[in-house]
Length: 443
Ligand code: FES
Ligand SMILES: [Fe+2]
Image 1 (tube, helix red, strand yellow):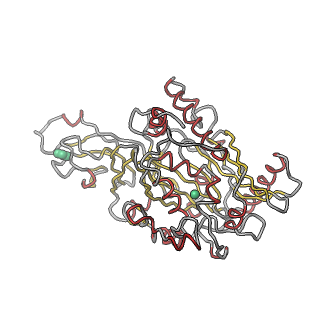
Image 2 (image 1 turned 135 degrees about the vertical axis):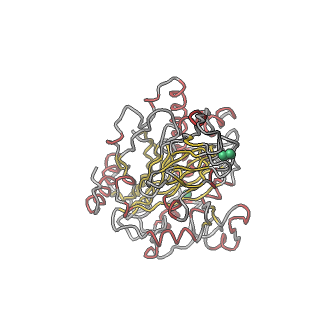
Image 3 (image 1 turned 180 degrees about the horizontal axis):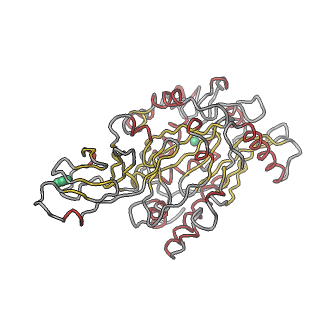
């Protein structure tokens, strides 16, 4: 349990708020590249409680500026894309991609008033299917050398989905390895051969045991969370009946991402990005270490579950997430179908818009969450003391030297009881994947 004051400090994201200021020190996913190519390249973006408009100008460059026209507040999303900027249709004020007003065609000839008019503007760059925005002060930080950024565009597929809850509880489901044995339990196993593009449907590393069976049969993982340059490395051990140990390594990437294995071929790096205090998007980068990603198929799979243009899931609180008590008895733990994203969505949305952490009771398996909150509190304190470089990846370690992160499932032999031996099993299966990877995934 934490105090209400602490809960506010860790969850609220507006300008000047504790967590909001930490998040503003990092690149944030603002839109999918697909959103800019689907039609006119002008899309509304609500990010960290700020209303913005993202556009691609005639030179192909990105602009991310305030949504409300500084004249009298009209919506710039309906602006005219002209002359490397956006022109408000109300009185024609024209803004360049840096947010500077460069023309006020209705004002008297020779007026220089426009020189004083500036709207919000933030740097935006595109990387492997996502447009990233930097909303903090000073120069944006360098991107770390993570696999999802290093892999060629052919090997990364990006998608997003709306969750109607605060970002922190969305993130916390991803650093809680215990829930997979329950929330995502399938009472029967599917054929792993039919697993493409889905999570937890492959066989467990070097075995013919479906992941679904392993998670179901071993519901009491031993979990540890260790601080790293990028955030947390979270290890979940499941001690199998034959003496071997299943080792699952996942990661928290500071401040609001996770990196987890999806299958032996792919990892998922997923940001939980605040739209505002009460809503967030997950942005996933599915990164293949083997064949190019079948983007058409993966997009189709996900578009069956989401509507455009806001990427809202078709199953949601308003239709009880498709809950079917019969299915809950016979097929799945939740009764909400086979898409594990819906399970997570129900879990985090059903807590309420902002989870009331004054009433929670964390157990031993919540160690990832406990360690993460400690890191976030330390980052908030460091910013308040002006020690910005004490934040992860913002100074003490060169981001170009931060790789991976290693994220996989492996099986350690019966005699591998020590921590070092378990780590060796993870390292060996990671090295095998990287050695066979068609792009340069060496670390
Ligand atoms: S409100 Fe935009 S130009 Fe007047
Ligand atoms: Fe989950």
